[in-house]
Image (cartoon, rainbow, N blue to C red; front, side, top):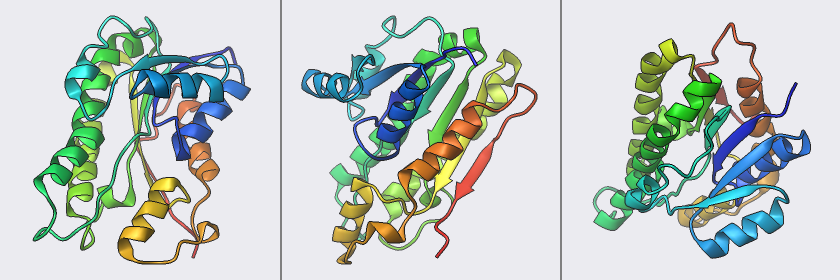
Amino acid sequence: MSPRTHLLTGAGSGIGEVLAQRLRERGDETWLLARSEERAAELEAAHPGARTVVADLADPGAVDALEGRLPARLDSLVHAGGVVELGPVAELSTAAWVEQVTVNLVAPAVLTRLALPALRAARGTVVLVNSGAGLFAHPQWSAYAASKHGLKALADSLRAEEAAHGVRVTSVYPGRTATAMQEKVHAQEGKDYDPSQWIDPATVVGAVLHALDLPDDAVLSDLTVRPRG
């Protein structure tokens, strides 16, 4: 398979970090979104040969400003970045709602719009790393789940709209995965954190790569990955 070009968010940790490593190891070109110039330098050091673009997902206007600065062809756009803040509806702050909906939903929509010409040129694939919370909302998870339910809606609409342009759209719904975000969630829940109990990020990355490498005669629309326990 000839080298391909990918744009990733969330490459600084967890699923996004492992995916960036795997793509680089197989010789693909990676463009990584960084929230600041300092973070861009860290990503370039951690992922030799990667290119970076700077925009904070918490600021959709900054994402909008990336217009004209992305590759002319993209084989994939992978949305792996996100934030979480748990709490009951009775207590969750306005800021927590705004941040999660902005980072987890609005910014991916804006970035996808900007990347569509490049994705159409390559008949590429958009992968949205969603969550089990994108399918069912548990207590304390209202804002995060709402943002992820919205991300599913974005994917479903985009899939239908872009099929005629040859762009495939895949939603991946991981269950609890052993990442820094999961450690934060456990702390918010007041629970001890044992990463061995949860999905290895590399397992989710395997599912993402399967979607990216799928033959042209099919699209993997939705894929749920759950812990065995």
